[in-house]
Length: 411
Ligand code: ADP
Ligand code: ASP
Ligand code: MG
Image (tube, rainbow, N blue to C red; front, side, top):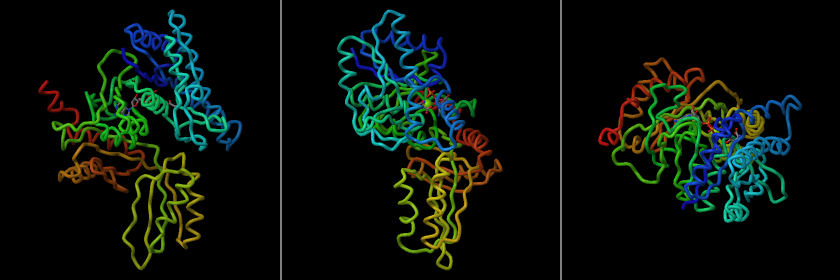
């Protein structure tokens, strides 16, 4: 008997019929003799709809109220899944994030988990119940409801699995992690397994299939993580901590992200402490910055460009304008029509040729590169937003990702 934390995303619980199907999957695991905790997302596009509704009421809704509002989406689906299990004759109980013991800091809409106190979850399990947890939410010391950032039901599931010493199964509308988003590249191929380093790079560079923090937590706490379909019985993709000799020096996948905006500070005096002066206030406001490029200086002045998520742009610009005034920079410009495309694979940076092949491929496709950033296992280019899909398809072809990998050919 194992303890399993499952997670069902919004598409998996979008309708009453889908909720009944999810309940059946959960029930099957329970009948096999396992203890099951299922974390659920809000039904379909509920979170987007609630955000739109709030903005019809108030252009700048308070984040505390937003969190209470958005948390209701997950609460609705958790109760319905519990009811569907009752209808099948199983004992189940729904719990909010607070009841499940997810304690967070008070940074509303982007709270971080401080601790998980899963006593209630354990008690319910020990009484033979299936526990359905509303994902995406937690509670502060002052008992205020928080949410953990978009897509963070994945994080709820992995963090709960870590706290309970369980394994984690993340069910969604695709049957695993593909070489690229199958909605953009129809030739994308499912990977049987992927290392957590590679998965983390893909997730943090935009692959919606897993939320980035959840991959990080799974890696740190050694939580076995499987991504599979809630619609069929295909085997899925295993995310593991090893390195894969067979796949070394290959591009494993392509991530893209349309949720990118670019901020440029021009005419920055080139002195020690300037980068800190720009980025410290952003960090203080919990705004994360991704790709950063500083130009070589000329006549003591330089330009600094960085990217943030589109949603953060309106908050970042006034902060940076304030900084620009203080440090006597010439001007601040913002551009929200950019996107990001990344190739990821263990060892690609140490092997020559991957970067030049990527740049050649984009150039042949007539796509201009505006910024470049790399890690040991990733190369990212910032391009025009409307070129991102073309870039994904061109790179998928150039790196022959539609072809089976050596390990698959051998098996
Ligand atoms: P859920 O509702 O289960 O949270 P999401 O819509 O957040 O599901 O994530 C699943 C979607 O992620 C898929 O439908 C797919 O379009 C997208 N996706 C992006 N990159 C990948 C990838 N590399 N492999 C598989 N799916 C991907
Ligand atoms: N419902 C939340 C969102 O749409 C959390 C999630 O689905 O993981 O972002
Ligand atoms: Mg999701």
